[in-house]
Length: 356
Image 1 (cartoon, rainbow, N blue to C red):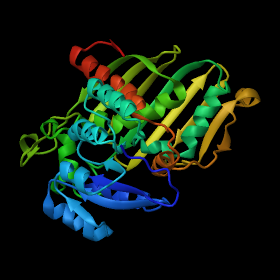
Image 2 (cartoon, one colour):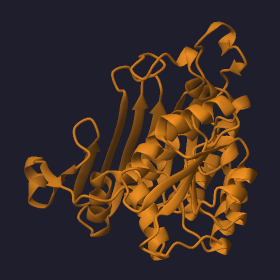
Image 3 (spheres, one colour):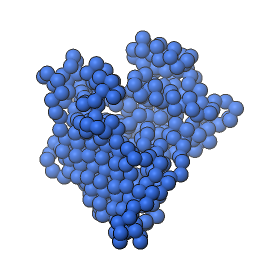
């Protein structure tokens, strides 16, 4: 089992999966003192070799078994396609490695719970990369709600809007496997709901609390002749709307799409209660929250509340390993969010609300 308590030795991290997001993980890990990128792994030999050369990573593998046996890493960052998260994480946990896993944690809540149980038994640090937990505004919103500044919650509105099916800001999706697989269930995608809907569910429920019931509508729109390009058949949802009831009695809507022209990557959250409302709009700020509460309610006056800086998940992952501590959002949180997604898929298939 990996243990890295000595402050004199860096935490040795291996990257599993070397697609688009893996480059972001490398950049963020490189900003963490006491972290060394020891190896990378991908089933595509040419891609992993290129990745390692580009980022000066000393060891490249095409087999996770070989990586675990030969790289002597302390921790892994799993950046493979969604369908591989559970089997890869379980394999690494059996080897006693600390695991940072991309979202969604798994394709279903059953596998996510298995991962959480295995991580606890292994006694290692386990985090899911809900990367918007890196934004100070979200923590400030959660603190304001938990301190009772909004009173009893009544209404929640949350959305995550992207536009890469319309705009080529991030490149031409028609020519990029990193985009194409996200549209195809055959390639392990759970659609926009699984890809970024998982983020906005975490974003809304972290401050507002757990969801009790969901009524979901999912839609797939035509994007190409016969709705496919090469081996990629576009059958995974690209728009999702969830009408939800929270455990505290509040009602809300959570929705996400890839068709929101003009919004490259926008997250929005409004929480309203008996004493006021707060708002986050990432296109305006990720370091502050707007609030209308108390004496400001009478004149509908909104105030800006600056948020305290927070370390990002990659820093917290390494710090927890070095201190033998725990951190959030862990695999149990990932499984909790996955339950909401499972209920949403069930609701869309049945055409009625489903308890979470």
